[in-house]
Image 1 (cartoon, helix red, strand yellow):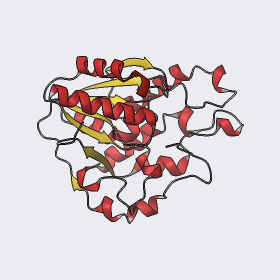
Image 2: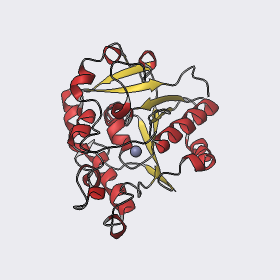
Image 3: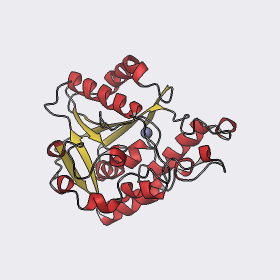
Length: 254
Ligand SMILES: [Zn+2]
């Protein structure tokens, strides 16, 4: 699937999701007695957009948190003439750290794998091996949903699912790009497998503040069409909702 974002490809508006029967049917999540969360981000920002509420929940419960940044996200503006003049990898990691700090994670524990942006599928073995060194039995592994619709997101989700089942960890898949392509009234998202994490007003406000740290994603980096924002305002609103949705991996075939 090729994800297109421009003025004529903005995905379903929030109004459409607000009346989604499938979304309304999703039951609340039960995190259980997990003491440690291992987050997996294909690009430095996915962990905040997809799981910024869960990160705050984990911090509030005194859980130990660790983040694996799989790529540096350097390929976010592939056709831009401005992008090569910027150190996008460094910029994106620094934006991610600032966003996590805004969520209350003052000194985030981040492992960087530096896989090439866009090439996670071709480096599955490296990612799997890294996850096997990080995950322990009883952990909660939180990665992009294995069918989120971006090749890197799908590959991270698949590797996290595999490693979690190998180790005996629980796994939840967060949604980022699925909100862009899925039909709100359809069954593209497996609603019965989904669970909802409700955010308190304060958590929601902090998450919205955190999404503002991703300047290189939410604003244009130049004047040409290829420099346009990756996440223009209508898309960003998806991540300001008072809830997050996770796909539960239990009993899923690998
Ligand atoms: Zn991403």
